[in-house]
Image (cartoon, rainbow, N blue to C red; front, side):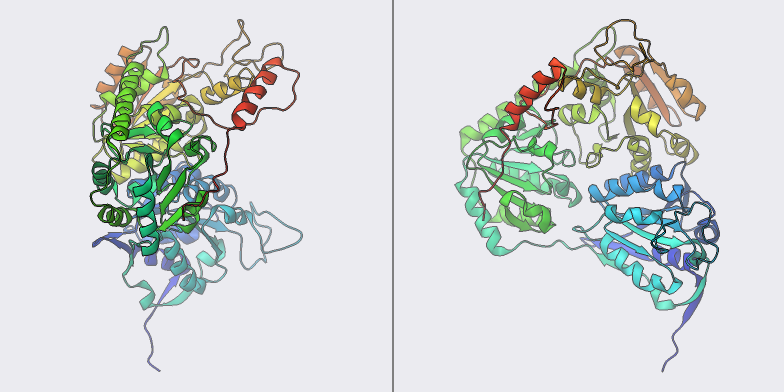
Length: 632
C-alpha cells in the first residue's frame, strides 16, 4: 500500500487551513469563499482557534465587540456578495456562543451563508462542569450549543479531531448551495480544538465549489407559457432570488418585452431601477398604492425568488381575484410549491431567459400596460410629496429618509433592518442599483444595522454606506461602531431619535392600546406612560451624540431638515465613521396604501378602544384567503 502524505496539525489549525483553500465558481468567475473571520476569544477557543489564527495571519481575524454583531457583519457581507463569499464567526463557550444564536437565525431565515464556530464543553468530560457549562441531569452530551440546531441548516459537534474530515465537506455543501444555504454551526469542544491529528495532505488541496444554474422542468415551462399567454392581468413579484442570481438585467429585458408590471418584496427591492415605468415599487403590507392596486386584481402572479412572507401577501389579503393563479420560480422546491403554484424549480436568471424565448412576440394588452405605467407615475408623485414635507417643530421620518435618498451618492448602499423605518423605506426609497437598498427584513433584527453596515462596507469598500437606525436599535447594539473605526471602514450613520419605539407605538395605537410601554419616559403614577397619556409625561433623555462620540465616531447633531441636509454633505468629507443624530416626530408616519397586516386584537377587553379595534380586525380577517386553485 502506498503511504499517503499527512500533516500533523491541531484540529483548529486544520480547520483554518481547509477554509483557506475553499473557492466558489459561477459563470466562470472564481472567488475565495471565506474572507476571514469575526470573533472574540475566551477560555473556550483561545488555545485552539485563537492560536491557529495567530500563526495564520493570511486568514484575517477581525475583533468584534459583540458576538451577535460579528455574525450580523458576516451576514451583510454575504448579502452584498450575492452569497458567493462569506466569513466565519468564532466564540468561546457559554454566553459568547449563545450571543450568536440570534445572528444564526438572521442568516438562516434570510437564506444567507455564514459559518458559526462556537467553542464547546470538554469532550473528555473529566473536568466537568467547566466554567459556563450548562449541566443536564438526563444527558452528558448536551450544551448550550444545541440551541443552534433549529436555526442552522447544518449542525454538528466534533468530539474528535478526525471528524473534521467528514464534517467540513458537508458544511461546504450546504453553505454553497443556493437552495440549502443559511447558518452552518460546527460546535468545537475546547479540548478537541487543541488536539493534534495526522491529516491527509489531500484534504488541504484547493477546492472549487461550482454554483449551478439549474433549469426547471421543460413540461412545467410549457405550462407556464400557457398560463402567461392566457392571463389578462399578470404581475411579477420580484424577491431576493432575482438579485442573488444576478437576474436584474434579464428581468428588465423580460419586462420590457412582455409589459408585465413588477412589485418588489423587501429582499427584492432593487430588482428594477425605481424609475422603470413598469416598476410599481413595494408590494404588500408596506407596499405602494401602485403595486397593491395591481395585486388586488391580478389573475396571475409570477413570483421570482420570493418566499411569500405575510408582508408580501398582506397577510393573504393582497390578491383578491377569485381566479388568481401562481407561477413560482425558485431554487427551492419548498418555496416554489407555495399557494398551489406551478413550480419552476430553477435559477431565476436562466428560467427567465428560457421563458422569454418561449414568449417571443407576446405582450400584455396595451390598456393594462398603460394602467400600470400610470400608477407608477402616480406613486412617484406621492413620493415627491412626502419628501417635500417640512413638518414642524420636528421633521417627519419620511422627509428624513428622503434627504438621505436624494443627497447620498447614487452608487451608495443604504442599510436598515428594524422599527418603523423598513416600512417607510420599502415604500419611499428610490433604488438606483441592485445593492442600493440593503434591508434585513426576514428576521427584522433590532441591532443589525451598524454591524450590517460594517459588513456591507467591507464587501464594497468603494461605495459609501449609509446606516439608518432608530434609537431603539441603536441602544440594543451600537458597539461595533468601534470595530468600524478600528478597521478604517467608514460608515455614515443617521440615528433617528423617536423618544422610544416608534414602530410598535404606532402598532399599539392601531390596536387600541395607546402606545403602552413604547415611550422612553419616567413612570407616571407608578405606570409606564403610553402615547395617549396626555401632559405631565417626563421623557427619558439619552444623549446619543455624546455616546457615539465616546466610541470614537465623528458626530453631527441636527435639529431641522436643513441641518440634516448640511450634515449629509459634511459627512461625505469626513475621514471616519460619522454619526448624524436627529429628532423625529414619532406621531407623523407615512400612510398605508390599501393594505393590511394581521396582528390579532384581544377578543375581549374592558377598554372601548380595544373593542373598536377588534371590530375592524374582524372585518379585515374575513378577507384573508387560502389559495387553492392549482396553477399546474
